[in-house]
Image (cartoon, rainbow over all chains, first blue to last red; front, side, top):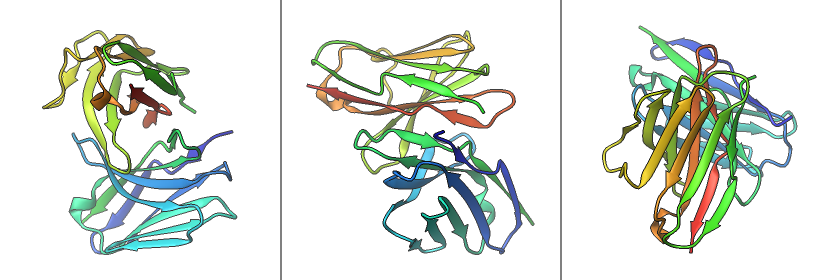
Length: 111
Length: 114
């Protein structure tokens, strides 16, 4: 199949790290993306990683890619209330940029 | 799981012609459909939101007469780019929200206007 799977919900305490996980099935994926959707807003591209990379870090965000296990994760350090959103992972595998999407993980921040 | 079928996956058209993009929810009822546009390596820009049977709500700056959205049934929504011009070349993607599932995205349509 061509599934991208992620859990629908994640609850963390403010100040802790959040780790959002994603698994995919197609080993020919070229780029993998993390998008953020805040309530009432469109999708915001957070970061992307090329399939020949293992890790990418950008300020509080760390993306880890385990190509062998087809597992992608997004770690948000020092989670804040402003991080409350739905996070989507997506992959693309050809030059047409067709995207295969996960269903989104809703990140809930507890005070 | 929920599947949204989006067609065509890519299309090339001449300037001045119209192009229709379809999104179908295959195994669930999409009460709300979102249409996005994406430029390379940029975020998806929300163009409009449509609820079944009612007129679409367009985001600021999106021409509703140019991007016609029809959501006539709970399983089908269409986006028609009318009188397309090269600046309309982009990647268009739909997203459907049903009652049970999270957001389900189509695989996108690459439009090239020549």
